[in-house]
Length: 497
Ligand code: ADP
Image 1: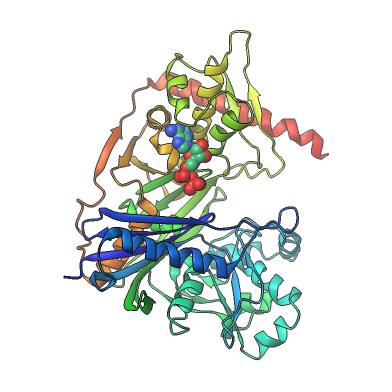
Image 2: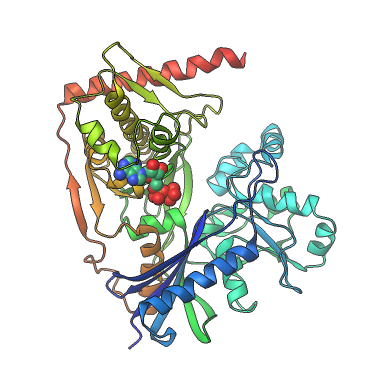
């Protein structure tokens, strides 16, 4: 009986492989880190060959650990870091440059130029994105413009572009699969999210030949066979990491929201079949769906410094020894004693978008101590998430009734309760914290027919946090946060002038 699902979870710092059974239980897991390459300030690269070997050895280790034979695997799901670009030569199979990672800012000047040409409106309307170095298009152009002979080879039809999902499938299928899914395509800044095709005008603007772009499929569909330990396994599900987590958290109905509390936070709301255009600088993106479903969309916002503020307490301030300790510290005081931390260490994202902002601590008094600061740091993660929830509610015209939480910092019960209180919503933590990998596994399992899409037992709720703060206190706390944001922005404003 083929009842297992192999999932490749290729992240920014490591490649993981997980074998799930058909009920979504993790049977085994293996993980390999790979090198982060920083060739210049704000340049970030990965070696695509190293990613491939890290991924492949995680797969073999995971299958061996699971005790099952590759032949018992029904299907494969893939989820991956989004936007990161690989360009390779299809004749040799060799990358012509390192992968340019989503975090890399090298194309920021090109983005400024695109803005000055007045392309913001067209790009937002077509792709749902803001012009930013984050997305794939300017990275592909950079490779074509800067690698010797690349432009000529591209014009001869010899080069292929792919996000990491595409690269892995192409290599593991010996060049037979050249495809990506709609969620990954929607992060390239080249894909028309309404007409579901590569946009010719954008390809002209970026001077990218269409011959170097993969076929785009539904997230849950049959991609083809890859060779794993001598067995031919069928890839049946592919999704970018955040959309995969949205699916893995069962946020499949309009208005469903998940937040991943990692180093940063990624909040996504399913908006059903409508691509909602944000009035609050959020992104519009495609959500993962299966072959039988019509296309669905999501609104997306991110908090740059989420769990990272806890790392800062640990590594820079030495206030705690490990992240988990922050929970007891926060609970040891009644409140933050009026202290607010705005951790704008990397500027402020949606809905403020102030790339010059720097962090602040407001409201200090003589009585403010270590535990108040720790509590304020945890609260800042919830306040920033709440700002995104508010923006999404305004954009989508729906009220968020519950928030599904995952990621490392979602283990912090103080944070989850404070989130429920400050957002006046239920916060739901699932049993399976591997929501990202589970999403790809579900997409694959549903497509292969071994999982019923309506099976709600998978990833059932482990804990629900319900709001327990008076409305007066909530409003007062939010007013304090808003004042702290205002002073953070005005602190750097004068520096800019
Ligand atoms: P990523 O995938 O971004 O690497 P993870 O989902 O592994 O992140 O989460 C790691 C982040 O979560 C770190 O920034 C860490 O500080 C934070 N974190 C982990 N455990 C806790 C905890 N118990 N309380 C608060 N923050 C935590």
